Image 1 (cartoon, rainbow, N blue to C red):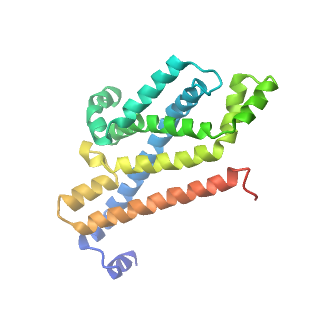
Image 2 (cartoon, helix red, strand yellow):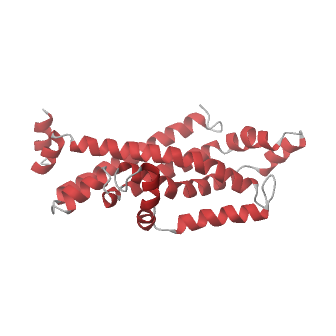
Amino acid sequence: MLHCLLTIFQFSEDFIKLWEKGIILQSIWETVYITILSTMIAYLIGLPLGILTYYTSKDGIRPMPWLHKTLSALINVLRSVPFIILMVALVPFAKMIIGKSYGNGVLIVTLIIAAFPYVARMVESSIQEVDHGVIEAAQSMGTSNLKIVFKVLIPEANPALITGGIISTVTVLGYSAMAATIGAGGLGMLAITYGHQRFNDDIIWICVLLTVLLVVAIQELGVWIVRKTDKRIKK
């Protein structure tokens, strides 16, 4: 039945063969798990880095200009390097960690390093949106700085943090399309190997469509989470 549906929609024979061999589903799965895993680890690094960058800023809870400038410089430098260049430059570093210079593992390592500065800046921007009066009220009640971070800043910035997380996830998904450059899998590999290199435009556009559908799914999930967690929205 599935074969008939694919034929009805006039997909190319190459696509049908790739679907029957499971290559299409495998590519989708690799793109999803590479994106999710890379984003999660990037957030484990970027979230505390972004909080610390705000914490030590001029308007932060405990201003430390030298540390703030150092962190900001690190974030800006890493964010300014195009991902394709950063990915190639980090291959030796990734090889030191996972023992090889190609494959999904290398892509995940490079994605994490490329994404965590972006995440850190998104987190810092999200926390800056919190009303400073809320922070001052907490300080006037003798709340410790650590509690202000976890009990005031993060909860108040939660909707913006989730929105930033969705944007970061979509950005990582876009980066993952360059997977074929270092022998990794996913829809990027499928488009380049079975589409571009074989002059098959059908495969390329199908990969574009699948990527767009993944982006839409991520964004819709993010909107649903924000609606469920934002206390400003009436249930």
